[in-house]
Length: 328
Image (cartoon, rainbow, N blue to C red; front, side, top):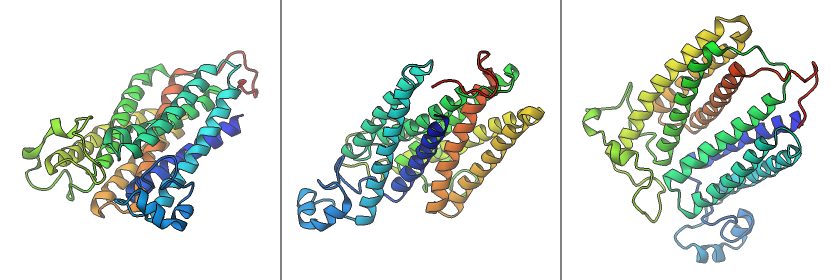
């Protein structure tokens, strides 16, 4: 069972990367319908019936590469959903039943968000929610795996508060990153350290962070003006500093304790890597490989912080013999 959970977590991480690739290559509407592609099961079938596909969606001519990116994401996400449902069934008669039910409910909601992403034409609130849902699934899978481990270090309540603050800051930062991407604000500011010109004179927080934006035929490539997008970008950058400070402080505190040093080192290295990838995105104008890696780094940091918060508070089940797995 542990292997199944880890394999499913690895697949969830892959889905996040594939989703980032799909979004960053502007392939989110590569197939303008759902769950098929121009009314067919595969882009190949749509290409073979190009005239019919075009008649169904005359405003969106078929682009095969983008269609495959979108459908590939759907195929992999569907496999993830099936594996999560298997895990939920296996956990039904165990103490982890609630955890399994939460996973099943969330993956079904993720499927709905995936549908709405297409049917609502990349509405930013839906796109960001879909990203956060995928990260939550990944973290829930890691938590389930940890709950089944009998060998846990002694809890460390002294660091519980710094760890919680770091996690909250990271969640906010990831949400800001998703909002930046969903509103196509990633390349609005092209200079360091904050933004070009008198950026502080153009801040518009009301328009920038309105979750329900004015209705549009499509939100592809964004509908906000420059001031709103610049505000989103600047907020993401400034909050990144706060998040990095909190993460590095937590990492330093963990590294002072021999038993927790590897975890602290991992957090520190991933934080510095994320900062470097963020800077590279600005300096080199969002290269695809760097931008996808930045998404993956955020997911890895989320896993590390969720695991850290759990381990700082948790103790191994007293009734589990050494070497025996917790049933699920």
